[in-house]
Length: 523
Picture (cartoon, rainbow, N blue to C red):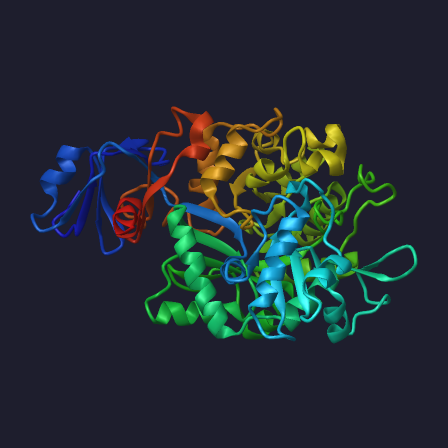
């Protein structure tokens, strides 16, 4: 261990390394963005040069930086600057926020609201056209549901966007009149009409990065828009990209990727081309995830596949053959089955030893699905925070699925028991890894509940595997990136208290990018 050039030493801590060979440590030495030494306080401090910075962590817990395997990162930052409905307790409260926002902008400008979730309201129903007409009749208005698979627009927006009853996935009432509710493909219409420009996306990236650092997130897998790549590249060129990005490209860009000869893994430590993001079905919140049995609260509705199976097979087959990782959104049991079948067909035609194809969300897999995933070497990329948001005895899952299906949705324990690689992300609902980890560790059903060590591994060591990065990050190991987090308490000794714990420091490439104690002093 040669520490003669170490620029900083973090000592007097209890570090859980997630390295199989050195499971704990008391001090970490860093230089040039890398961990150059890890071990006991005495050996690290003794060998570090006199001029290096010294950080006394006062016995606090250190873990590897969190790797969020499923985000919409820039969009999250942009949305944070719009009307945020995520904390509203009722429809009336949400509409009041929209009404107030409308008063602050000129007539005819769009009012954009985000993150509504009727499951958290006392009067839990979807927002409708009439609701929005009542609070902002002079503005075109869109309110996006938290899942991203449903939005509501008002009458002025319907007129401006030329949407009618024949528009695919635009909902109508019993008399054939538009309700203003849009699902799946129709959601893209207001999204496109209100798309932020590069300047707004740049500010969104900055806002999202601050949020990520405050929560201990040092790396993300982003499912963004194609234009987002230039925002990331510009930030990197200017030295302002301070979160590591694995960028999953929208499926509509496959032809461009193939024409340019691009494949998974091109890039730098801070920005790398990831996989191809494909949608197979919808979402449970919007009642569009494809199920084999009808929704408990919507008789006759079994959700939908969002594209023809032949189109899915074409995308999967061509991407697999070109060594492009696949990240396929599949939530319902039917959607999951279709996805596994498509991947199996592609891999039979063009076998790959280390493809690391992923199924995103995987909320209702069967035992047979998990066997198939194990056989094919597929990764389960899941969101434990969904349990915290919609699980339990009175959550959305129970109303959508009934008690039997709710008891084994998001079955993290069954995934691990089936020897399927499990990685965690948030889908930005909300971003917080600690909230997600708490939700998995303290889950209400046996099929879901896993240990704190397993949950942290899914957000660190194993998460690195999903982006082919296990050799450079995910553990606190000499020779790997100096990305780590200091926690207020020990989650492995007090797993029932994880949600109340705080990120005290976040370190990216050896630099402190978030320091809670300094933030308090500035206040």
